[in-house]
Length: 422
Image: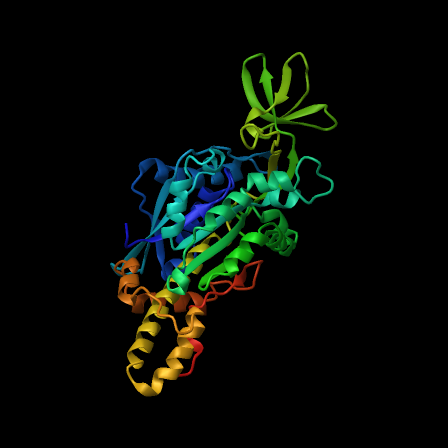
């Protein structure tokens, strides 16, 4: 799979990575952008492909049937890597390229060093990294009225330190192999609708400050923050202690004890008056974040405020990835042209300056990937077609910059060479 653009999705369990991909497909498939670039799921693994389909169907069903209800969202877990293959194509042509999205299971971080080597290897070889962040825990950790969540719980649930450690394996080969890292706060609907998305971005900068600082030391790594509204009309409501209820001695259901301990709200949103002859409560053991840890993550409850499935900015992930990789190919072409000019003595001094600017390594010969090698990841889409579709996305205002919390924290040096007048 050497000629496929690879994206590694990292983050805690149940942060919404699958829903993020589902939203990407849904938005691009049914939006006006479908006239510029088409996308479809071509995942070979039937279970993984069905998981995407099920995610979209269940989200739409919840919106239609749970309007006005407060309930728990899906808590399914995965204990293995899952690969999703999305195919992007130029409408009206046979030109297409595949992008591999690999999901690192949140459970891997809780298994000691059992999967360390596997994760580290992928970090070294992948092109793009999506850091999925559970926004409710990120923000509730600094909510003074919430005693159930704190920084320790957020850091552990979102695996802040684990992700920092794994990203130290990232290798941009001294600037010659540019990388893209996008921090993606998910389930941002509440803060976006309240006009507080800037607070989410600031929290990402604060919590991930050591990682952002480490990434800034690389010669050619772009770092973005891209908040995503995963569904659009399901918003975070509150956190409650993770409990389970045994009914009639045999049926267990996740729940929350509410209204001054007079009622129980079950995971599907139904509410009953507490009857201690029928309801027996206990702490939900599945809420323990890590084995042998006393930290228990509270349950995040969500409320449906509309019946339409309206994910927002999931598609931006695709646009940013395509735009980044196009710039990477063009960068390689520019380097090749500069090397050709280097044969002429009058360009020698300027080439030395350009090389220093681009790589930050004056006087050092740096190995880089040729543009022809990199273009293979475009599949059968030509460079001219990729330039055209990217320009259409830009001119049409589809690619958002410095809007709705989307922010480039650190630019790569992919465009630096184009700014030099030779």
